Image (cartoon, rainbow, N blue to C red; front, side, top):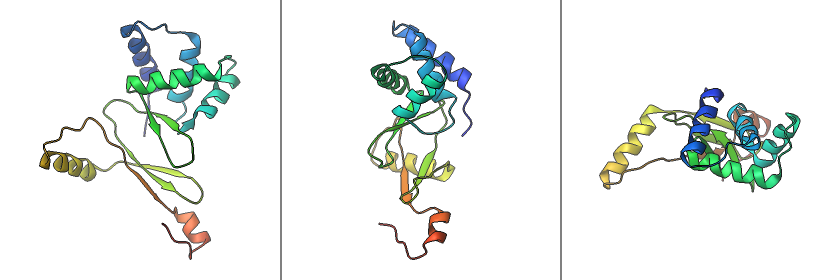
Length: 154
C-alpha cells in the first residue's frame, strides 16, 4: 500500500489544531516515524526510529502520540497475535487486509474489491452501517510451507 507521509503529516497537524492540542516536535517525530515507515511498527520500533533520528522522546510520549494517531484515523492499531500491538499508516479511503504467517511472522497485505462488496452486502442484510473493518488471516507463508511440508495450520 502506497502511503504519502507528507500528506498524512499535514492531516495530523490539522487534527491537533482542530482539537486544540499542541503540535510538539516529539509528536511530529513519532508521527513521521510511523508515516514514513511503510511497515507495521511496534511502539518499541517507533521509539528506536525516533531516537535514531536524534529526537529525545520518552516512552509515555510515544504511547500517547500513537493513541492520538489512532484516534485521528490516520494510523491503525493491529494485533497480529505477538503479545503487543503494531501500528501502520492508513490513508483515508484506502483499505487493506492482512495475511500473517504463524511460523515466521511475516505479514502480507492485500486488497480485494469483492471482499469489500461482500462486507457491504452482509452489513446491509442486517441493517448495519459499518464505519470500518479489519481482517487478519493466519496461516503459513509459502516459504514456511516449503521448509516443512508436514506443518499444519490450526
